[in-house]
Image 1 (spheres, helix red, strand yellow):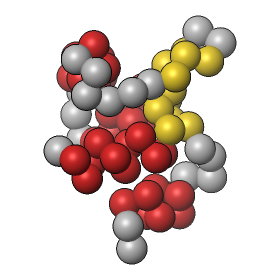
Image 2 (cartoon, rainbow, N blue to C red):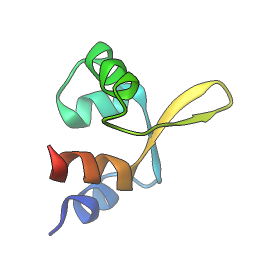
Image 3 (cartoon, rainbow, N blue to C red):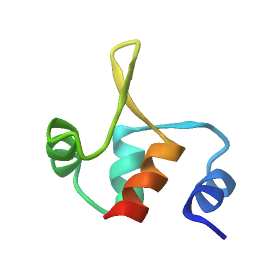
Image 4 (cartoon, one colour):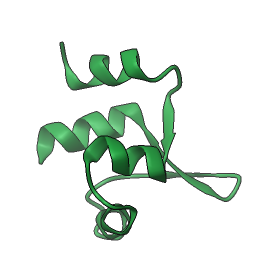
Length: 64
């Protein structure tokens, strides 16, 4: 099972917020912010919140 399929099974949505993403990656939210600023992981801004697509999280996990 791929990382993306695994994420899709665990979450019934296509975007995760910062807290969920940090937990999934087993890093702090501050580290996640540093990765965002370094363009290592792409995010989306929706109604003032920062979100990460399951596809982007999967890409990040497989690349790093």
